[in-house]
Length: 290
Length: 258
Image 1 (spheres, each protein chain N blue to C red):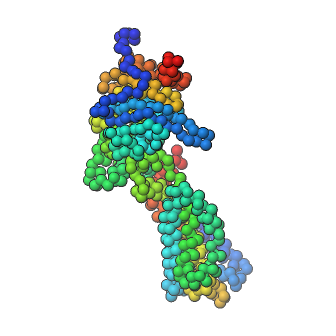
Image 2: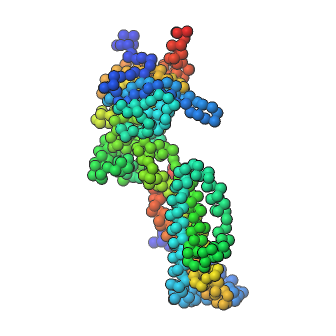
Image 3: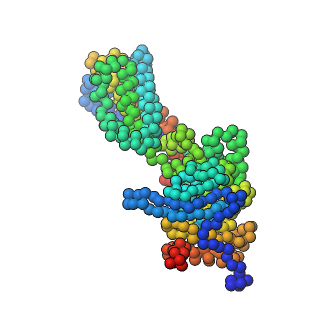
């Protein structure tokens, strides 16, 4: 298939919204302004998009594009200046029970005084879940991430990739509906990263949870996602919302060597380059209007 | 076998050299007030493994123990409350630093008048002097809680008292233990000093009494008891610390190795 013969990309220059029955998470007009000693800094200007049920959506943007700010607002860890986040019809004002976060800094997110299984168990113990149920969920979660053999190790005795697996196990044992991942594989080596990407796809499919995956890695966003939301440079707005129409079965070798993968990757790369140069769809709109 | 010999040589080498030196010095220039080690050995057993054990030594240790435990418990509790609250921190910091800087023994004369020459006063002064390192270290340890750990707790609904129990206290434990390590010798010093005023029993009292009655070898043997007591406290602390902070030492060993 020649490049110019390929199907047009399914993309729009704003965040997609969905009918209520398909929607799990809604972000509406989200804005975040930090008040600093040097005056207010607008990190996120206006973000609107929906996350559907059973979706793996990647958020990708140039560095400093407010990705982490956005994720923290969605997670209920940070209050937006205006706009709102709605999960399952309920406005998010504090970290919701149905949400789990996997942080980039696995070394600091796992508690070094707890062993692997204890780390996974802690949120359940905190919620007052009975011991039997806890043990079952912990065993299942560790099995899901391929760490059944090290429950008694301390996290810091494991490699970086394994530590991030522990963090993922902790998140899925918590039985969330939405899993938020903040550049989770930025600090692991390339081979480990490929394994972890496949792990996320597998876990998402098996457990039927929705994943919002923040990354600065363009290849990763296209390989992982059903959909890629590209963010502009700060103050952030949605630059483009692209459907990744690759086959559902992804394979590090097969998928990445597909023509369509290359096209999608190429497109996302171009958009991110534009964003880095300061191109913003709202400017374009303003110009065409003016 | 060889390892054991090396261990013995390292552990007892320096004490053996010092005792030998002591012996040589006292043999060359005998001094009534500075007896040789042999002269202290017999009074050491005769004096301290008799009635004085439960009349002087054990009550002293008990007062030390009670005072120091009060200091640890209050230090950690107040430290956590203050450490978690920014306003409370800036409100209390100058005052805490003032009391920490104040040499506690000067408070004994007024406390003798206020409380009286009894056990309560001695325990009070031991606790008062040894609380500061625990308190200030706890405040610092709690304040410096890792931001990612805090966010992890919040995102998993670990809040309030359970956050203190599951995250804040374990995270601050290395610093708290450092405070406790500092508080023990302070408690021991105040134990002795508090027994040197207006009292009739205790290790500190006994040493002063021996000095006044020119029971010189007995006086030195009391100092030996104190030294051994301090050493014993440090050993017990070390065992507890190794157990509580096993993860921390493992982590540090790993970091140092790489």
